[in-house]
Image (cartoon, rainbow, N blue to C red; front, side, top):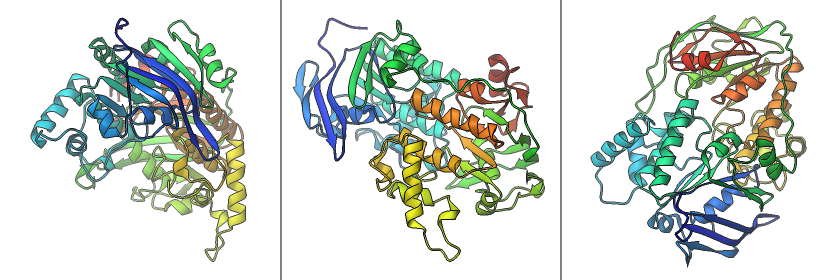
Length: 505
C-alpha cells in the first residue's frame, strides 16, 4: 500500500439529509492509492448513500470531497468515471433485455467496437476466473452471474478508485478467493479500493483499514487485521449480536417431497438456456431445515421455480406437498396449502419498488383480499407497520415506497412478510444476501424459530457458514444434480466443496 502520496480520496464533513432521516452526518473518510479500505455498517447505516455521493449519483448537503489532494465536485456518475471511479452496485445497474457483452459495451466510453468489447470481456473474465455466458440476456442470468457482469465491467475501466458494494454476496468460496487475489493485484498497481461488506471475516482478510458506520456516523476507523469480529460487530451495532445457535432437531412427517424430478434445459426466453434438472430427489420434514449449497447457475433457480409453482410444468407425481401431488398446481394453490417462497431477487420478484410497503405486503397475503377482490387496506397497513417494527425495518413507515429502503431493509421486509404468513413449508433463496451481521443473525434466528415451531424449511444459499449454522441436513446442487443428504453435524467443508465442483455427483 502506498502512503507517501496525497490521499486518492478524502471526504470531509459529508452530510446528507432526506425528509425524516439523516443518512450521513459529518462523515470523514480517507483512502490512499493502493489501499483496500473496508466500509462496515448495519443496513440503513448510510453506506450506500455515502458510496453514491462518491460516485456522483447523490449530491451531499454539506462537506467536501478531495481527489488527489484537490477539492472537487463530482456532479454525476459520468464525471466520476472520467476521474477513474468505477462502482459495482449491490443492486445491479444492468439492462435486463440486453446480453452480457451489450451491457458492458454501454458502460464503456465510445470508440470500441462490439467485437473488441466481446474479446476484452472474454479475456478479463478468464484472467480473473469470473467466467460469463457472453451471449445470454441479463434477465435470464442468476444473481451470481449478474454480479460477475458488474465486476468484469468495472475491471474493464482500469479504475483509479474501485467501489464494490457487497461484491461477494453470492459467490462461492473459491470464486471469492480468486476475486480477492484480483483486488490485491489491482491495489498493488496503485488503484484505491473501497470495499463495502457485511462479512467481517472478509474485511479482516482483505482490507488494510476499515471505517465503521452506525446510524449515519463514523464510530471508528480500525485495522481490521488486528480487530476481532466481536470488536467490529460492537462498533457496527453497539453490542455483539447473539448467534442463532446450534439446535437439536426432531423432524416430523415429510412435508415436501421430490421424486425423480428431471427437466430439460432448453430455452428460458430471449435465446438463453435453462439448466437441466436430472433425477432430483429431496425430502423436507416438519421441523427440519434442509440447506442446499452450490455455485449459482447450477439449477438452484430452476428447482425453486418448480417447487414454488412458478414453473408449473413438472412431470406429474414428481412434487408432493403433504402427500398430495402438486406438480402441476399454480403458485396460489400451493400457497393455500401452506407453502410460501422468498425468492433471491428482491426487486421485481420479491417486491415492487414503486409501491408502498403496505401495497407490497398485500402481494402475497391472500387474507388481505376479499373473495370479491376488495383490498382490506386498514388491515394491510397495520400488518406492514407490525412487520416494520418486528423485523427492525428502517423505514419512515408503512406508506414509504419500497424503493426508499436499503437493500438489507427491503430483504427484512420480504422475509418478514412470508414468515409472518405462518407457512407450513418455507422455500428461501439467499436469505441474508447483502445483510449486515446483526440483520443476518436476526433472520437466521427467525428461520430456526420457524422450524422449531414445526415448519419445514428449505434454504438455498451460497453462504456455507450460514448453511452449516442453521441447517439440520445439507445437500449440494451442481450441474442440475442434487447430492445425497448428509446431516449438517457430519458434513465437512472438503466434502461439500467437492460436490460443489461436481465431483462425486
